[in-house]
Image (tube, rainbow, N blue to C red):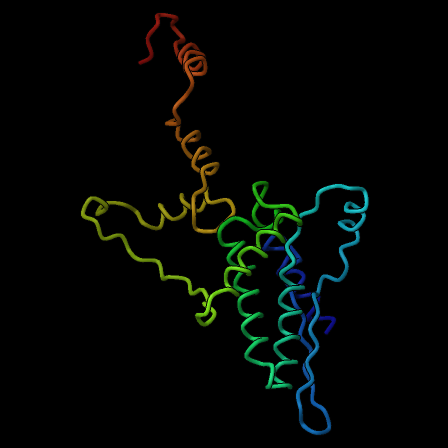
Length: 217
């Protein structure tokens, strides 16, 4: 288990956060029933607790703890089938609500960057998504990522698709597959095509007009 914890922690650090790793230990009772133990591998994040006590904002993803808790609930429900349908509806919807928050850039800042939500706002957002899901009479919906479709328009015939995806990923800083307004502003600014206010435009013109002739070649 030590080796497993060390390896998963290393993988998590590569992906910017230790918060999304869960450890599962599996065994069997004498009667053959499965024993499962779930935990968040990262343990207690003491520095965030002390920040909270000082009244400071905190923002770290709870995925490891959420997945561990929901996994334990699913296993308990499997051992008590009379409650399994109700428990499964909650665990599937809760898990999908959390995942949806991160996919849409409404996750915590360790994974979504500065535009991410604080701990409290993240919890509120997930609660809102979960309430809407639980109120539906339809079976819980599980997200399935769509396969990337090749460019088909004739005007895209000469486009290097892989280079374009690399370029897109450069500005999709939270990795959710969507260019937010802030990311769009960063992109147009770097490309030099962002509309400027009059005073900023004049300053830019003066900077480029090295001959001071009122013209930019």
